[in-house]
Image (cartoon, rainbow, N blue to C red; front, side, top):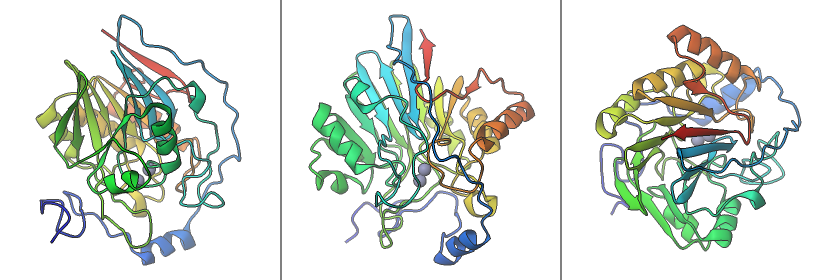
Length: 319
Ligand code: ZN
Ligand code: ZN
């Protein structure tokens, strides 16, 4: 018996993308590692601390970039964290693997009370069990994870966990959450490839919509999301971890793809993420922002519509 309902993205054993993507075999990983022209990132960057900017009466929301794929989203009456990772390394072990090169934009102790945590998929740069457990101890928030990831959290003592399939929706307080397709994959070890799902979320409070894109390659799912769920006011879109293209293209967007996603979604504003914190791939630390400004110029999009925040910086969406 299969663990989940068979669907257009689950065959009874593994999940897969709506558009076929290349298979990340041991051979291709080795080929990448052997031919890689990795540009070394700085060892550490000391950012100026920015005090947390609270939500005010004339804001619909405030999005603050904690770093990588983690945003604090302050809405009316509730706070959400996306893919919170406070670990020193995005890795199964803390002595090896991609190390963070800057502190989190909001220190853990300075986080406000968290009501809801959204986790897009189980990669270590998105699902950090130590951080999730600390959040559970601090505020006992509700956790929404991708189909197949609930057991991992429950086995680690986290009680309020809900897993969702693509296009499902759920209500939390005054807010509606949709779990939506992305083009990616999952694995935490050698033997669990695509055993759990991946995706993004739409957070709706009244007519205000915020889209969190998770990790994704470019495909027509952005158009599908706009057509089925509606146009976001704000989209949080990954722009980093994209070189070399022959290997990363299907699974991680580059800034050019990210601007196309912004246009497909019809997003009013977009905020860049998934760059500048952990070196996962070959590009230099400042390439994503350089390439983003070229892409914005190419597609005629203003940098006040697709923005990049400083770590700890906030964007207020006014009512
Ligand atoms: Zn990932
Ligand atoms: Zn990632």
